Image 1 (tube, one colour):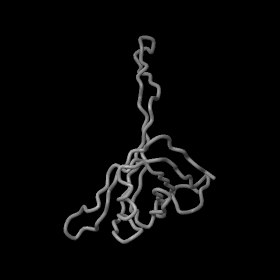
Image 2: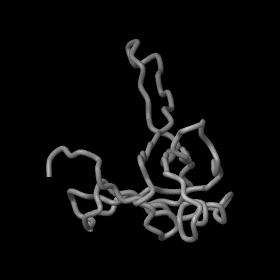
Image 3: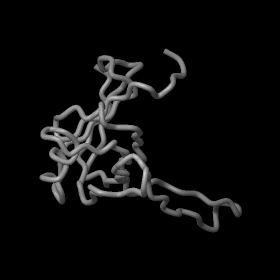
Image 4: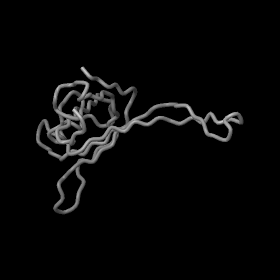
Length: 136
């Protein structure tokens, strides 16, 4: 597989496939830059990596029926749960890795929008612990 359009991603929250409600998803990973510059670097900055962190952003098309978005997410508020993200719905493979982590569900937006808008939840959750990349 080469480049691909993000049209069939898999979003799993607390072991539940929420893909049918997700309109967008993003995993952002960051590392702290620790400056190691000294007089011996001839005027060039040098650095090493420090602590790592991450966050996931997901936009859900909201639904209030049983076993849908609000019913699944509201009880998880302010808890740490598993989160998995894949580029496609296909099986995990070298060309379709699954990113696995725990996230803190520290924000929800059950009702947000303007007149005539689609009711959505635009959410960002911090990663808690390590992120792994599974290919099998």
